[in-house]
Image (cartoon, rainbow over all chains, first blue to last red; front, side, top):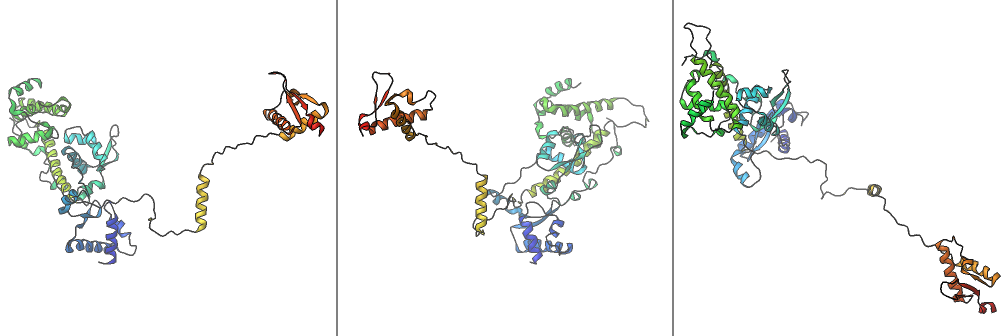
Length: 184
Length: 249
Protein backbone atom coordinates (compact mmCIF):
# COMPACT_ATOMS: atom_id res chain seq x y z
CA UNK A 1 0.00 0.00 0.00
CA UNK A 2 1.06 3.58 -0.55
CA UNK A 3 1.95 5.63 2.52
CA UNK A 4 -1.20 7.72 2.01
CA UNK A 5 -3.41 4.62 1.97
CA UNK A 6 -1.76 3.46 5.18
CA UNK A 7 -2.31 6.85 6.78
CA UNK A 8 -6.00 6.74 5.83
CA UNK A 9 -6.27 3.22 7.19
CA UNK A 10 -4.81 4.33 10.52
CA UNK A 11 -7.18 7.29 10.79
CA UNK A 12 -10.24 5.23 9.81
CA UNK A 13 -9.25 2.48 12.23
CA UNK A 14 -9.08 4.94 15.13
CA UNK A 15 -12.35 6.72 14.33
CA UNK A 16 -15.63 5.77 16.00
CA UNK A 17 -17.74 7.43 13.30
CA UNK A 18 -17.47 7.87 9.54
CA UNK A 19 -14.81 10.41 8.55
CA UNK A 20 -15.68 12.86 5.82
CA UNK A 21 -13.55 13.19 2.72
CA UNK A 22 -12.52 16.67 3.83
CA UNK A 23 -11.31 15.41 7.19
CA UNK A 24 -9.38 12.60 5.49
CA UNK A 25 -7.77 15.07 3.09
CA UNK A 26 -6.73 17.23 6.06
CA UNK A 27 -4.56 14.36 7.33
CA UNK A 28 -1.96 15.10 4.69
CA UNK A 29 -1.70 18.70 3.60
CA UNK A 30 0.25 17.72 0.50
CA UNK A 31 -2.23 15.17 -0.78
CA UNK A 32 -4.65 16.33 -3.46
CA UNK A 33 -8.34 15.36 -3.24
CA UNK A 34 -7.77 13.06 -6.21
CA UNK A 35 -4.89 11.37 -4.42
CA UNK A 36 -7.05 10.83 -1.33
CA UNK A 37 -9.81 9.30 -3.43
CA UNK A 38 -7.28 7.04 -5.15
CA UNK A 39 -5.85 6.00 -1.79
CA UNK A 40 -9.36 5.18 -0.52
CA UNK A 41 -9.92 2.99 -3.57
CA UNK A 42 -6.61 1.34 -2.93
CA UNK A 43 -7.53 0.65 0.68
CA UNK A 44 -10.96 -0.71 -0.25
CA UNK A 45 -9.38 -3.02 -2.80
CA UNK A 46 -6.82 -4.12 -0.29
CA UNK A 47 -9.59 -5.30 2.02
CA UNK A 48 -11.67 -6.84 -0.77
CA UNK A 49 -9.02 -8.57 -2.85
CA UNK A 50 -6.83 -10.02 -0.12
CA UNK A 51 -9.81 -11.11 1.92
CA UNK A 52 -10.15 -9.38 5.26
CA UNK A 53 -12.58 -9.52 8.13
CA UNK A 54 -13.29 -5.84 7.71
CA UNK A 55 -14.21 -3.69 4.78
CA UNK A 56 -14.15 -0.04 3.82
CA UNK A 57 -17.64 1.42 3.59
CA UNK A 58 -18.84 4.81 2.43
CA UNK A 59 -21.85 5.92 4.43
CA UNK A 60 -23.14 8.50 6.82
CA UNK A 61 -21.41 11.31 4.98
CA UNK A 62 -17.97 9.72 5.13
CA UNK A 63 -15.87 6.61 5.22
CA UNK A 64 -15.70 3.93 7.87
CA UNK A 65 -14.07 0.56 8.48
CA UNK A 66 -16.69 -2.02 9.45
CA UNK A 67 -16.64 -5.73 10.21
CA UNK A 68 -18.08 -7.88 7.44
CA UNK A 69 -21.73 -8.85 7.85
CA UNK A 70 -20.95 -12.58 7.63
CA UNK A 71 -19.17 -12.45 10.99
CA UNK A 72 -21.95 -10.62 12.84
CA UNK A 73 -23.36 -13.68 14.59
CA UNK A 74 -20.00 -15.07 15.66
CA UNK A 75 -18.95 -11.67 17.01
CA UNK A 76 -22.22 -11.34 18.86
CA UNK A 77 -22.02 -14.89 20.22
CA UNK A 78 -18.60 -14.09 21.62
CA UNK A 79 -20.22 -11.03 23.22
CA UNK A 80 -17.72 -8.74 21.59
CA UNK A 81 -20.45 -6.50 20.20
CA UNK A 82 -24.22 -6.19 20.35
CA UNK A 83 -26.42 -5.36 17.41
CA UNK A 84 -28.36 -2.14 17.85
CA UNK A 85 -32.05 -2.64 18.58
CA UNK A 86 -34.48 -2.64 15.71
CA UNK A 87 -36.85 0.27 15.42
CA UNK A 88 -40.57 -0.37 15.84
CA UNK A 89 -42.79 -0.12 12.77
CA UNK A 90 -44.31 3.08 14.14
CA UNK A 91 -40.85 4.60 14.66
CA UNK A 92 -39.74 3.60 11.14
CA UNK A 93 -42.83 5.18 9.60
CA UNK A 94 -42.19 8.41 11.44
CA UNK A 95 -38.51 8.35 10.51
CA UNK A 96 -39.33 7.74 6.84
CA UNK A 97 -41.63 10.76 6.80
CA UNK A 98 -39.03 12.97 8.46
CA UNK A 99 -36.37 11.75 6.02
CA UNK A 100 -38.46 12.67 2.99
CA UNK A 101 -40.23 15.78 4.18
CA UNK A 102 -37.62 17.45 6.37
CA UNK A 103 -37.80 19.97 7.81
CA UNK A 104 -41.19 18.84 9.05
CA UNK A 105 -43.36 19.55 12.11
CA UNK A 106 -45.22 17.11 14.30
CA UNK A 107 -48.66 18.01 12.98
CA UNK A 108 -47.69 17.21 9.39
CA UNK A 109 -46.30 13.81 10.41
CA UNK A 110 -49.50 13.06 12.30
CA UNK A 111 -51.51 14.09 9.26
CA UNK A 112 -49.67 11.52 7.13
CA UNK A 113 -49.56 8.70 9.66
CA UNK A 114 -53.02 9.33 11.09
CA UNK A 115 -51.81 8.88 14.67
CA UNK A 116 -50.23 10.96 17.43
CA UNK A 117 -46.44 10.81 17.17
CA UNK A 118 -45.23 12.78 20.20
CA UNK A 119 -43.65 9.87 22.06
CA UNK A 120 -42.22 8.35 18.88
CA UNK A 121 -40.51 11.65 18.01
CA UNK A 122 -39.08 11.77 21.50
CA UNK A 123 -37.58 8.31 21.26
CA UNK A 124 -36.15 8.96 17.78
CA UNK A 125 -34.60 12.13 19.14
CA UNK A 126 -33.12 10.25 22.09
CA UNK A 127 -31.60 7.72 19.73
CA UNK A 128 -29.95 10.58 17.85
CA UNK A 129 -31.72 9.75 14.59
CA UNK A 130 -33.58 13.05 14.32
CA UNK A 131 -32.87 16.51 15.60
CA UNK A 132 -34.68 19.80 15.94
CA UNK A 133 -33.63 21.87 12.96
CA UNK A 134 -35.74 24.96 13.44
CA UNK A 135 -39.18 26.37 14.02
CA UNK A 136 -42.00 26.79 11.57
CA UNK A 137 -43.44 30.23 10.86
CA UNK A 138 -46.89 28.79 11.59
CA UNK A 139 -49.11 29.36 14.61
CA UNK A 140 -47.26 28.59 17.83
CA UNK A 141 -44.06 28.30 15.81
CA UNK A 142 -43.93 24.50 16.10
CA UNK A 143 -40.59 22.67 16.14
CA UNK A 144 -39.28 21.29 12.88
CA UNK A 145 -37.42 18.01 12.72
CA UNK A 146 -34.74 16.65 10.40
CA UNK A 147 -32.57 13.56 10.21
CA UNK A 148 -29.02 13.41 11.61
CA UNK A 149 -25.72 11.98 10.27
CA UNK A 150 -26.36 9.14 12.70
CA UNK A 151 -29.51 8.33 10.72
CA UNK A 152 -27.46 7.99 7.53
CA UNK A 153 -24.95 5.80 9.32
CA UNK A 154 -27.54 3.51 10.89
CA UNK A 155 -29.27 2.95 7.56
CA UNK A 156 -26.10 2.62 5.50
CA UNK A 157 -26.84 5.71 3.42
CA UNK A 158 -24.05 7.82 1.93
CA UNK A 159 -26.20 10.92 1.89
CA UNK A 160 -29.88 11.85 1.83
CA UNK A 161 -29.92 12.03 -1.95
CA UNK A 162 -29.36 8.28 -1.98
CA UNK A 163 -32.97 7.76 -0.90
CA UNK A 164 -35.10 7.16 -4.00
CA UNK A 165 -36.90 10.24 -5.19
CA UNK A 166 -40.62 10.22 -4.45
CA UNK A 167 -41.45 9.74 -8.14
CA UNK A 168 -39.11 6.76 -8.32
CA UNK A 169 -41.09 4.82 -5.78
CA UNK A 170 -43.36 2.05 -7.04
CA UNK A 171 -46.41 3.98 -5.93
CA UNK A 172 -45.92 7.30 -7.54
CA UNK A 173 -48.41 9.78 -6.20
CA UNK A 174 -51.09 10.31 -8.77
CA UNK A 175 -53.44 13.16 -8.24
CA UNK A 176 -56.54 11.67 -6.70
CA UNK A 177 -58.48 13.62 -9.31
CA UNK A 178 -57.11 11.26 -11.96
CA UNK A 179 -58.99 8.41 -10.40
CA UNK A 180 -61.97 7.15 -12.29
CA UNK A 181 -64.79 7.65 -9.91
CA UNK A 182 -67.65 5.23 -9.91
CA UNK A 183 -70.22 5.98 -7.25
CA UNK A 184 -71.55 3.05 -5.29
CA UNK B 1 -73.65 7.42 14.92
CA UNK B 2 -71.07 4.78 15.66
CA UNK B 3 -72.76 2.96 18.49
CA UNK B 4 -75.37 1.09 16.41
CA UNK B 5 -72.59 -0.10 14.13
CA UNK B 6 -70.66 -1.46 17.05
CA UNK B 7 -73.68 -3.55 17.93
CA UNK B 8 -73.98 -5.06 14.48
CA UNK B 9 -70.29 -5.69 14.58
CA UNK B 10 -70.47 -7.66 17.80
CA UNK B 11 -73.31 -9.66 16.34
CA UNK B 12 -71.12 -10.48 13.38
CA UNK B 13 -69.18 -12.92 15.51
CA UNK B 14 -65.64 -13.59 16.62
CA UNK B 15 -64.17 -13.88 13.12
CA UNK B 16 -63.79 -10.10 13.15
CA UNK B 17 -61.74 -10.00 16.31
CA UNK B 18 -58.31 -8.78 15.31
CA UNK B 19 -55.26 -7.76 17.26
CA UNK B 20 -54.97 -4.06 16.44
CA UNK B 21 -51.52 -3.72 17.92
CA UNK B 22 -50.20 -5.15 14.67
CA UNK B 23 -51.31 -1.99 12.90
CA UNK B 24 -49.39 1.24 13.22
CA UNK B 25 -52.49 3.38 12.75
CA UNK B 26 -55.89 3.76 11.06
CA UNK B 27 -54.38 4.19 7.58
CA UNK B 28 -52.40 1.00 8.04
CA UNK B 29 -55.56 -0.86 9.03
CA UNK B 30 -57.47 0.66 6.13
CA UNK B 31 -54.81 -0.39 3.62
CA UNK B 32 -54.82 -3.89 5.05
CA UNK B 33 -58.61 -4.10 4.59
CA UNK B 34 -58.35 -2.83 1.02
CA UNK B 35 -55.69 -5.45 0.32
CA UNK B 36 -57.70 -8.24 1.91
CA UNK B 37 -60.82 -7.29 -0.03
CA UNK B 38 -58.79 -6.90 -3.23
CA UNK B 39 -60.58 -3.68 -4.11
CA UNK B 40 -59.28 -0.81 -6.22
CA UNK B 41 -57.80 1.91 -4.08
CA UNK B 42 -59.20 4.48 -6.52
CA UNK B 43 -62.66 3.03 -6.19
CA UNK B 44 -63.09 2.01 -2.60
CA UNK B 45 -66.48 0.47 -1.74
CA UNK B 46 -66.81 2.77 1.21
CA UNK B 47 -69.87 1.17 2.81
CA UNK B 48 -68.24 -2.26 3.02
CA UNK B 49 -64.82 -1.00 4.09
CA UNK B 50 -66.34 1.31 6.72
CA UNK B 51 -68.25 -1.57 8.25
CA UNK B 52 -65.19 -3.79 8.41
CA UNK B 53 -63.13 -0.96 9.81
CA UNK B 54 -65.63 -0.54 12.65
CA UNK B 55 -65.62 -4.27 13.20
CA UNK B 56 -61.88 -4.31 13.72
CA UNK B 57 -61.69 -1.32 16.02
CA UNK B 58 -64.49 -2.64 18.22
CA UNK B 59 -61.83 -4.64 20.07
CA UNK B 60 -59.75 -1.57 20.84
CA UNK B 61 -59.15 -0.17 24.26
CA UNK B 62 -60.28 3.45 24.59
CA UNK B 63 -56.75 4.81 24.95
CA UNK B 64 -55.71 3.65 21.52
CA UNK B 65 -59.11 4.18 19.99
CA UNK B 66 -59.07 7.94 19.40
CA UNK B 67 -57.08 7.92 16.16
CA UNK B 68 -59.08 4.96 14.85
CA UNK B 69 -62.41 6.48 15.84
CA UNK B 70 -61.58 9.67 14.00
CA UNK B 71 -60.98 7.62 10.87
CA UNK B 72 -64.19 5.67 11.46
CA UNK B 73 -66.12 8.93 11.65
CA UNK B 74 -64.45 10.08 8.44
CA UNK B 75 -65.41 6.85 6.67
CA UNK B 76 -69.01 7.09 7.80
CA UNK B 77 -69.20 10.70 6.62
CA UNK B 78 -67.88 9.71 3.22
CA UNK B 79 -70.35 6.84 3.14
CA UNK B 80 -73.19 9.27 3.83
CA UNK B 81 -71.95 11.68 1.18
CA UNK B 82 -71.80 8.86 -1.35
CA UNK B 83 -75.42 8.03 -0.66
CA UNK B 84 -76.63 11.54 -1.34
CA UNK B 85 -78.51 11.72 -4.61
CA UNK B 86 -77.04 13.99 -7.24
CA UNK B 87 -78.40 15.41 -10.42
CA UNK B 88 -77.34 13.82 -13.70
CA UNK B 89 -74.76 15.73 -15.62
CA UNK B 90 -73.62 17.58 -12.56
CA UNK B 91 -70.07 18.35 -13.61
CA UNK B 92 -68.74 19.90 -10.45
CA UNK B 93 -69.30 16.74 -8.43
CA UNK B 94 -66.23 15.92 -6.41
CA UNK B 95 -65.75 12.39 -5.18
CA UNK B 96 -65.85 12.54 -1.39
CA UNK B 97 -63.31 9.69 -1.37
CA UNK B 98 -60.66 11.75 -3.14
CA UNK B 99 -59.01 13.13 -0.03
CA UNK B 100 -58.95 9.69 1.59
CA UNK B 101 -57.40 8.16 -1.54
CA UNK B 102 -54.74 10.86 -1.56
CA UNK B 103 -53.89 10.14 2.05
CA UNK B 104 -53.83 6.41 1.49
CA UNK B 105 -51.49 6.73 -1.46
CA UNK B 106 -49.22 9.06 0.45
CA UNK B 107 -49.19 6.63 3.34
CA UNK B 108 -48.52 3.70 1.03
CA UNK B 109 -45.61 5.53 -0.52
CA UNK B 110 -44.21 6.13 2.92
CA UNK B 111 -44.57 2.43 3.68
CA UNK B 112 -42.46 1.69 0.66
CA UNK B 113 -39.74 3.91 2.10
CA UNK B 114 -40.11 2.09 5.41
CA UNK B 115 -39.41 -1.21 3.66
CA UNK B 116 -36.34 0.30 2.08
CA UNK B 117 -35.06 1.72 5.36
CA UNK B 118 -35.82 -1.51 7.15
CA UNK B 119 -33.83 -3.47 4.60
CA UNK B 120 -30.82 -1.19 4.72
CA UNK B 121 -30.97 -0.86 8.49
CA UNK B 122 -31.08 -4.63 8.86
CA UNK B 123 -27.99 -5.02 6.69
CA UNK B 124 -26.16 -2.34 8.61
CA UNK B 125 -27.00 -4.00 11.90
CA UNK B 126 -24.75 -6.88 10.85
CA UNK B 127 -21.70 -4.70 10.63
CA UNK B 128 -19.83 -3.37 13.59
CA UNK B 129 -17.64 -0.32 13.83
CA UNK B 130 -14.71 -0.04 16.14
CA UNK B 131 -15.80 1.30 19.48
CA UNK B 132 -13.17 3.86 20.07
CA UNK B 133 -13.53 5.94 23.18
CA UNK B 134 -11.24 8.94 23.19
CA UNK B 135 -9.40 9.36 26.46
CA UNK B 136 -10.59 12.38 28.38
CA UNK B 137 -7.10 13.20 29.67
CA UNK B 138 -3.57 12.50 28.48
CA UNK B 139 -2.19 9.70 30.60
CA UNK B 140 1.45 8.66 30.18
CA UNK B 141 1.67 4.88 30.06
CA UNK B 142 2.84 3.42 33.37
CA UNK B 143 5.75 1.46 31.89
CA UNK B 144 7.25 4.52 30.23
CA UNK B 145 10.61 5.58 31.74
CA UNK B 146 10.38 8.43 34.21
CA UNK B 147 11.82 11.65 32.88
CA UNK B 148 11.98 13.93 35.87
CA UNK B 149 14.48 16.39 37.30
CA UNK B 150 15.01 16.52 41.06
CA UNK B 151 13.85 20.12 41.06
CA UNK B 152 10.53 19.06 39.47
CA UNK B 153 10.05 16.42 42.12
CA UNK B 154 10.72 18.87 44.95
CA UNK B 155 8.43 21.40 43.37
CA UNK B 156 5.74 18.73 43.17
CA UNK B 157 6.21 17.81 46.83
CA UNK B 158 6.06 21.48 47.73
CA UNK B 159 2.82 21.84 45.77
CA UNK B 160 1.30 18.86 47.53
CA UNK B 161 2.32 20.17 50.93
CA UNK B 162 1.00 23.59 50.15
CA UNK B 163 -2.38 22.27 49.25
CA UNK B 164 -2.56 19.93 52.24
CA UNK B 165 -4.33 21.33 55.27
CA UNK B 166 -2.39 22.77 58.16
CA UNK B 167 -2.33 20.09 60.89
CA UNK B 168 -4.04 21.05 64.13
CA UNK B 169 -1.53 21.05 67.01
CA UNK B 170 -2.38 21.03 70.67
CA UNK B 171 0.33 22.71 72.68
CA UNK B 172 0.83 21.37 76.19
CA UNK B 173 1.96 24.27 78.37
CA UNK B 174 4.18 23.22 81.30
CA UNK B 175 2.66 24.22 84.60
CA UNK B 176 4.56 27.27 85.78
CA UNK B 177 5.24 26.52 89.40
CA UNK B 178 7.72 28.65 91.18
CA UNK B 179 8.72 26.57 94.17
CA UNK B 180 12.11 28.25 94.52
CA UNK B 181 10.52 31.70 94.51
CA UNK B 182 8.00 30.58 97.14
CA UNK B 183 10.81 29.22 99.35
CA UNK B 184 12.61 32.55 99.19
CA UNK B 185 9.41 34.34 100.18
CA UNK B 186 8.74 31.97 103.07
CA UNK B 187 12.33 32.27 104.32
CA UNK B 188 12.14 36.05 104.37
CA UNK B 189 8.83 35.90 106.29
CA UNK B 190 9.96 33.47 108.97
CA UNK B 191 13.30 35.18 109.24
CA UNK B 192 11.51 38.18 110.64
CA UNK B 193 8.59 36.63 112.52
CA UNK B 194 9.82 33.16 113.68
CA UNK B 195 6.38 31.78 113.04
CA UNK B 196 3.47 32.59 110.74
CA UNK B 197 0.27 31.21 109.35
CA UNK B 198 -0.72 29.76 105.98
CA UNK B 199 -2.87 32.81 105.38
CA UNK B 200 0.20 35.03 105.83
CA UNK B 201 1.96 33.26 102.96
CA UNK B 202 -0.91 32.92 100.49
CA UNK B 203 -3.01 35.90 99.62
CA UNK B 204 -6.75 35.49 99.11
CA UNK B 205 -6.56 36.19 95.39
CA UNK B 206 -3.63 33.85 94.71
CA UNK B 207 -3.65 31.82 91.50
CA UNK B 208 -3.71 28.04 91.73
CA UNK B 209 -0.05 27.85 90.62
CA UNK B 210 0.92 30.23 93.44
CA UNK B 211 -0.98 28.20 96.05
CA UNK B 212 0.66 25.02 94.79
CA UNK B 213 4.08 26.65 94.74
CA UNK B 214 3.76 27.69 98.38
CA UNK B 215 2.46 24.28 99.43
CA UNK B 216 5.31 22.44 97.67
CA UNK B 217 7.86 24.95 99.08
CA UNK B 218 6.57 24.40 102.63
CA UNK B 219 6.76 20.62 102.26
CA UNK B 220 10.21 20.86 100.78
CA UNK B 221 11.47 23.18 103.56
CA UNK B 222 9.91 20.95 106.21
CA UNK B 223 11.76 18.02 104.67
CA UNK B 224 15.00 20.01 104.72
CA UNK B 225 14.34 20.81 108.35
CA UNK B 226 14.13 24.53 107.85
CA UNK B 227 10.68 24.80 109.37
CA UNK B 228 8.05 22.97 111.25
CA UNK B 229 4.40 22.65 110.27
CA UNK B 230 1.70 22.05 112.79
CA UNK B 231 -2.08 22.04 113.00
CA UNK B 232 -3.58 21.95 116.47
CA UNK B 233 -6.89 20.52 115.45
CA UNK B 234 -8.65 19.55 112.23
CA UNK B 235 -9.50 22.54 109.98
CA UNK B 236 -7.60 24.88 112.25
CA UNK B 237 -5.13 27.26 110.74
CA UNK B 238 -1.78 25.77 109.82
CA UNK B 239 1.06 27.17 111.91
CA UNK B 240 4.49 27.47 110.45
CA UNK B 241 7.51 28.08 112.64
CA UNK B 242 11.23 28.18 112.22
CA UNK B 243 12.69 24.82 113.11
CA UNK B 244 14.87 24.65 116.10
CA UNK B 245 17.42 22.58 114.24
CA UNK B 246 17.87 25.06 111.45
CA UNK B 247 17.85 27.83 113.96
CA UNK B 248 20.68 26.13 115.72
CA UNK B 249 22.44 25.69 112.40
